[in-house]
Amino acid sequence: MAYNKLIRTLMIEIPSVPGSLGKVATAIGLSGGDIGEVETIKVGPAYTQRNITVQVENEEQLVKIIQSINTLEGFRVQAVSDEVLRAHEGGKVHMKSKMPIQSLADLSRVYTPGVADVCKVIEAEPEKAKIYTNIGNSVAIVTDGTAILGLGDIGPVAGMPVMEGKSALFDQLVGINGIPILLDTKNPDEIVETVKRIAPGFSGILLEDIGSPHCFEVEERLKAELDIPVMHDDQHGTAVVTLAAVISACKSAGVDLKEATVGQIGLGAAGLAICRMLMAYGAKSVLGADRSLEAKERLENYGGTPVDELEELMERCDIVIATTGVQGLIKKEWVQKGQIILALSNPKPEIESADALAAGAAYAADGRSVNNVLGFPGIFRGVLNAQSNKVTHPMLVAAAEAIASCTKAGDLVPQPLDRMVHERVAEAVEKAANATE
Image (cartoon, rainbow, N blue to C red; front, side, top):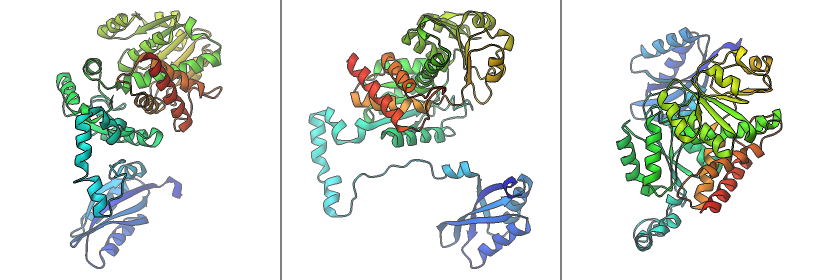
């Protein structure tokens, strides 16, 4: 039946000769494919580029169709896309002028000679660049490509779709210009130096998908050496949304977080930031477990308590959070009656929620709904609105509390595309920033 078929879009280079499209259609039909939409992308003197959507029974049939087209003289299949890939064709963001330039008078105001007057104003009073340029509303999204989503070290160019996604979310959710910056280096010194050199064009730096442990050094140095806010989203964005989820879970289970002992399994970039966020919120005690001695020492330096054995952590904690990426790490027999367990690794959690509940947990959830998009847009909107030069833990805690306040009873976090949530986060962060200035 049709719903079992694969739908793919072929980007095909076709000779600009009458009858060429018919040859493609024949090749597809003789190979058993069913043609859907045909879209002309580019018409040139020698070649026409078209996207042709086809339905096929399986991947083998798709390969047969591609081979049939490529054997035609002058024809070439340039790319094969599914719906997700097609959504990314040409990228997801672009720079667009806010002013129409339709006359010489427009040109003289936007560019030369009128722009010289604006340059002189900024030369005399540099702070006015935030008024007369987009610097005041621009954030650099910086990556070295070493920790892209769950894919790992795939390089900055392969990570560009993620950076574009962040940029699109910045724009649509809070109206910020997010500019992707790809760095072809993993060296912390070179990363720091490069970001410092480009910083004058931005009012904030969002570090994204930079691996552990060098992410800690990069962030701390940039925070110390720049006079604009710097935040590593994999650390603090994740921690904000996780704290919001923990607050909601505690409400559902009737647990006082500030009187609870919390255990964090996995002390990478996200795990350590979660521990710091819980301590900033006022949790009674925060324990952490990890195979890395360096990670445990770092937790101890932040004020947490390292634990060597997972079973011991499970025995001592009222709330357990796991961000290891290791499926099935938490054994059912370790679960304590009345515990809250958030096994946040995707796509497979450290323990399935149903198993944790069956073993006696009062509340259990996985990480499918815990999305960083609930945090970083509103955090930076609030920071920029306050014209703050830093992101502090009180601001981040305020963001988490705002997210939790928007969460419906029984849910872990709100719907991530609810604009009201991002407005609340921005307001809370701006208020916290103003209180500490």
